[in-house]
Figure 1 (cartoon, rainbow, N blue to C red):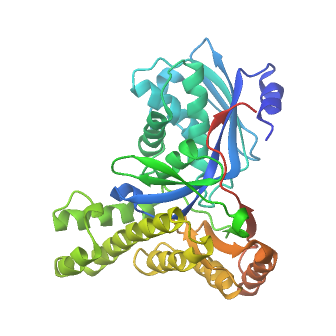
Figure 2 (figure 1 turned 180 degrees about the vertical axis):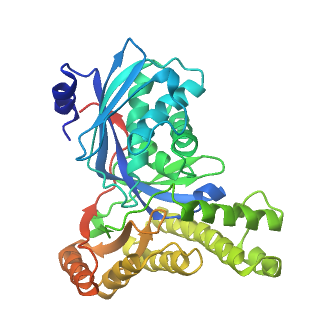
Length: 380
């Protein structure tokens, strides 16, 4: 990334600092976060960086190195939901969320430079929010801890950008450490780091970006959230987190088919997260997680109905080519799949995916390996 140089070229002076935050993949635990459940993401080694400096006139100027993306300028005092669109609303939303908390935030010049793929299900928006939050937190002297910044960034995404997400993405970006995945209880917000030594076991995580864009502010994501809320209300529980699979089977007659399927995914996915965490903390081989990942994809495809033909093909092809297991990752309706593979076989599995997409007439996917990366930080 070259946020510093781009800032200097655009604004004509040196930024006060550089702050960056990673994208993420979710190893297991999809659509459980807004149901107060469990998730198990990891930060990846692709990051969004911002160069920033305060202004004295209360104006917020936003620009990005992304080709074809327009700059934005607005007074901080005029920030309200709906005033900005596109990438800039994620940065401006962070400014707004600080203000909602009664924190006096100055105007700023901000330059965004990111290599987290947009629309790939790798949480590019949360990476942008978290990098911006670190910058504003420092430049405004707010001194908020990372756990508070998680909630602030979620509020920016929910209420300013209009995407009804949980805390998974922001938690992964702000709280992760290299070489670990993050086990997060989304009800209590308690978390702990779990070692994930892929290289030490000769394993690799392949991301298959299908190039089918997705967005959390799309109607499908919000509809699934409403489905879950209605199921919980019908069953008289605060959230689907409170249910076990036997509970759900007994309650099935009280739910319409779709509501039952949505709830079955959430409840079974929570169980899968706990299985994966226990497996790793017991020191068992990472490859043994493959079947759990594949079961998660089946549930997301059949019960939650958020997969796509491209995601299904990516999963089927990688498993047929030798992956231990694979699943879609992220909110769905496009985006990326994640495959757990032997590192020595990553090249041939990647080639198999590209061939299968070409035969199907789909866009050429981007396939790349990710390592459990560091969380958000200041400095180049």
